[in-house]
Length: 190
Ligand SMILES: [Zn+2]
Image 1 (spheres, protein in one colour):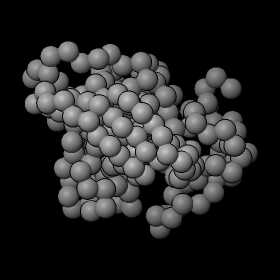
Image 2 (cartoon, protein in one colour):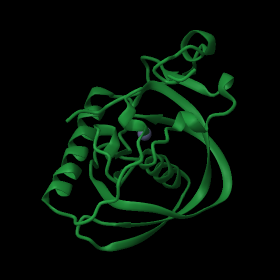
Image 3 (cartoon, protein in one colour):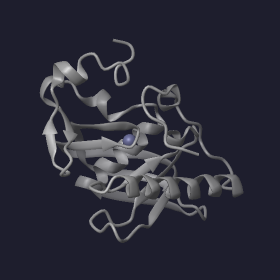
Image 4 (cartoon, helix red, strand yellow):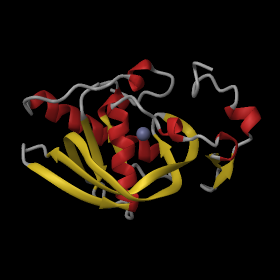
């Protein structure tokens, strides 16, 4: 198992619902946790906040979300199976997003600041989550993956919206014409 990146077509598929939560599903979740932490080890300035199953080429409706996004030492993730956005509300806020499957590019993405999500936990329990701000953004980003949508699809004002991380871990604007405009990995159709 490895993390797949654009323009892999599996990132653009709609994932199927999980039926029975059996050993195969639990194995997929464990692989996701492991891959997220492996990725983080290779990216010292970044935190692996969440991941969706299609990012390792498995088109099933499963995401994992970090339990504590502020503390890298707390490396536990909650898995959400068949997560569904019940309501997205609040103000539209624009903030930076990155993605394990869109290497080294960050973008400023507008998202609803409040969201209600319904899902199942690994043990089959149904949960409803009310999230705001960073967690709301993360849930919307990951659920998008289950529908074949990437954060770059939400960026309309492309000229000023893309960033990359320098070797000190700071985000700097990307030279749009040089790195984005003709980037076939990001925008294969154009
Ligand atoms: Zn992503």
